[in-house]
Image (cartoon, rainbow, N blue to C red):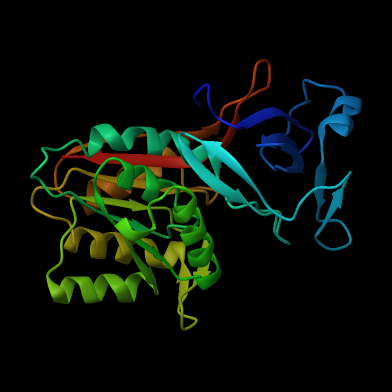
Length: 280
């Protein structure tokens, strides 16, 4: 995280995490945080403007006058924060490590075109990081709601017109790109454990991952720069992702590791999925 970031992981423990998003601090469930918190409960109660619970149905408990939405800046990108009925807020800060890699991965001469495809693109963090680096980006998500949210974020960052926006099922879109002969120098993907396409097509990671990666390989340009794969599904460890990348893509260098929410000061880092990065 940079010194100008408006996000902080303040503390975690007892199955929860305390995070500051811009002007407001939220207390949310976090199954990985099985340890003890560093701060006393009294401080959590004093700091949290909102607390999310799944007991007796999903619901937020708010303290004071908290708006329905606000802004938070992370890695030079401004996000619309909008707490949902599922406890999400419109940003996964653990992905910021990948956004920091993109300027070096996509460095190019002024007359060179770098096309980047961002699949399961959510609210657009990686899309905007690549676009700010001078790439032509295709942003794809099957959810119209998330597409609208991402476009709002693009407006906040003055990037709306520089991005190709696609609302579609990922695998159907990739099959069409293969028929068109369209290729990409960089691919970013963060597949969910389970999801549905625009026409209720089912994506289940255990059944779909190998097919998905083969389709990605088929749209990979000969002068490809990188593939960044991340995953929050339990069991998809860095070793698993490394094996998948090595089997699915041309010979290259694969690095992998845990995605971490980096704690503020004495707060403990929270593991939040895994990533693998392929570079040619």
